[in-house]
Image (cartoon, rainbow over all chains, first blue to last red; front, side, top):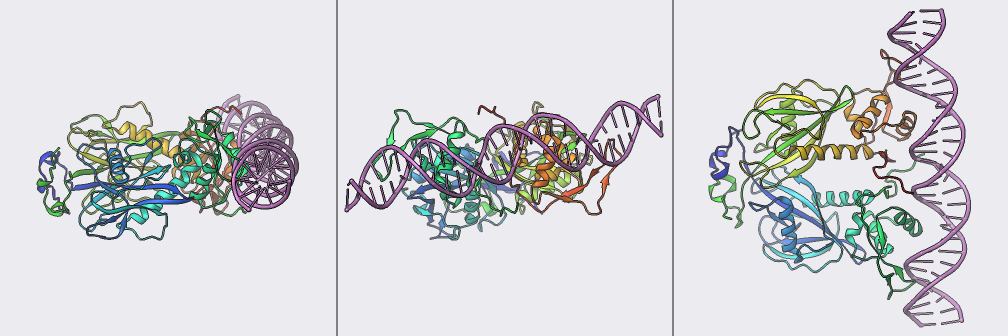
Length: 250
Length: 250
DNA sequence: CTCTTTATAGTCGTGAGGACTATTAGTGAC
DNA sequence: GTCACTAATAGTCCTCACGACTATAAAGAG
């Protein structure tokens, strides 16, 4: 295998005695939100080849002086129009580096998951033909290896709901326990018993705390629900386990 | 900041209309094992500047046609001298992309954790002055940002012990429950009750199964222990939670 | 008012798991 | 041999987490 380093100038030059190939580094974003009780993903329609006209995860190149995290935050702001909103949860998912994942060249992509409480309509700016919230559908074809990235993101978020306070990242600053339960039910695709869910959440120290002012959410049907806000804890002890994926043989 | 793309030939040329910087992509490996009941890390002594003479995690450049996973496996084989041994657990940790993490140039590094049952002495080949197993010590200075990578690896492995069968990756093909318990106690830095640990492990379907032949390990002091091998399960239900890091206020 | 809807309160029984004791089966000292 | 020591294994007891379930409260719709 021959080195192609000879084509590289500037800071690449003279890196000890190693041979290496320069890579393009990008970020891909799996931005999830809840709309009308359903999980939605932010997707962009590609305007250029390859995969022109197909849906893809938003993302872009990491700039020379950026970390991947910074690039992801910038791309998210550019695509959705919201600049570093409070309640934004951004987390590195993993890195995808298969040699042929981009047919043009060697691209290594650092994938992130982002969770948003409300869903402002994105304005598809820049390179994308349009950007839209679309219902999460594992069967929807996407450009590149984005189907896999999105599936990994969904799996990761689902797992994190068990052990972290991540669910509040899907909720507005003040929320009801019913809304919080909807997060779990929607992401996990299950239904939970409401009194038991309430007992578990309130018994977990630091998960949620009553919103100040004893505010209550009225306007809907039924008894008004008390409002809560995210607590100070970051990890959940004990964890809130989803119903066993494997049968219970015992 | 100007693009330095103009110095790039070959597949980098003419990538749409974007300006991007070529990055060097490396892998770093946090290789953990148990020796004499203590957690050890595989470290190499750097032979060149920067950080010449300092300890660092093994790693190296991703080759042109390699994925990061393939590169990690190759580097591990090169550094430790063991070629794709059975029982090798390799997993992507995360990617470190701070702009100045390498003083010479822009290097994005994909970090992996590798778990080994036995610890063959490494032969420090190639670029490293020497390679050795050293006791895990979060306070040991390391080159680059490797202290953080190693700490992240330790935290990740500790968390994974709770929900996965990962502990068997530290053990030889056949092991006693005492050896398995030592894995948990060493990585978590706690002591566990032996009968309770035994009950939990045996009650978890697919975690371990008796080794064929009703073999027993003798030679040590005390009653000989039965031998087990890793089961077919990959996830642990229910999880084997470590003693609560936060106090139990309830 | 009555029905429906949703939030909240409480009850009961099973079982997981922490703390603990007892027994078994080996080695090494004497 | 036998006695101490060590480690594996078996079993007990008690608390509490949690699933399943019933009951009550507080709103809007008609």
